[in-house]
Image 1 (cartoon, rainbow, N blue to C red):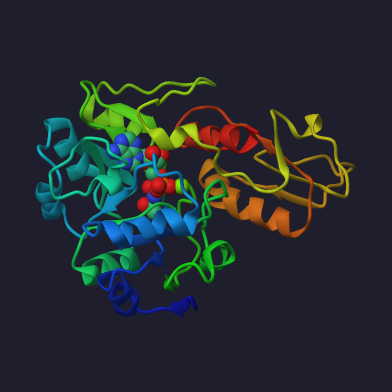
Image 2 (image 1 turned 60 degrees about the vertical axis):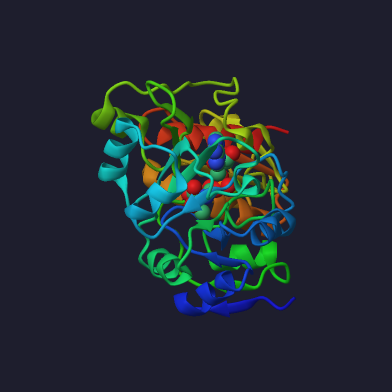
Length: 315
Ligand code: TXA
Ligand code: MG
């Protein structure tokens, strides 16, 4: 299959309407979209990515009203969060309606819904004229794509179309919040911090640490975000062993004497998140064998960053 590159949301949407796959930019990472109401089309996502079929997909909408059709009910907590954070990098988990095919939710009775804020994503989703099931547009296990070139690297020849856009803004995925529990539960920390959620709805369950915090989010069980190089977590650059085949990324600047093949000293958590997956792919291109990544404090976006770092480092 030849993968078409386009800057036209309408052209990319035409493939989705025809039951094919189009990758598209969002404010978090690039997504790989299919018509969520067509099981045959959704099946192609799992094939193209090599994604385990027990990992459910997020359904993307072009307007808040589409939610009614896709879920059985909207609890007050979900309503509040959607009003505050949509369009934006928030995925809410709700009881699904019969309209959502089982292949989308991997057989679960719930569905994840998200309305992205990225202008080109919104134009694309509107032109699709159907809800769009979309995981991150990487081969399963690889770092999520933050550029269209990264999508091409992973999926060229395996999907119909890539809708081009710039580098994605957030660089980490949406925050996934299960609103079927009281209080709601964060299943995946992401671009919206737990603190920001708590400001809106008070109590939110969000676990920390090494244990699998979210057994109800099947995707979190699988290997994720991994470059070819091994990722080694450090709390300071001095813990790293500089070599000509090692790379370093973190908030702290390594000593002048520490010579790495590639160094990225970021100046904020936002910048760290925006750079991380891109850095992983660049380091792979340099043929680096070890990527040292500095962990951060768990506040704000730090929680999502540490989550991605830990998963990338897990072998
Ligand atoms: O920012 C994002 O969320 C991006 C863009 C493209 O929207 N999408 C994304 O999708 O990251 P994906 O498939 O790579 O990650 C979705 C996560 C997985 O961990 C999956 O298990 C979880 O959401 N998920 C989806 N539906 C669920 C459900 N019904 N119950 C529990 N977890 C669910
Ligand atoms: Mg993913």
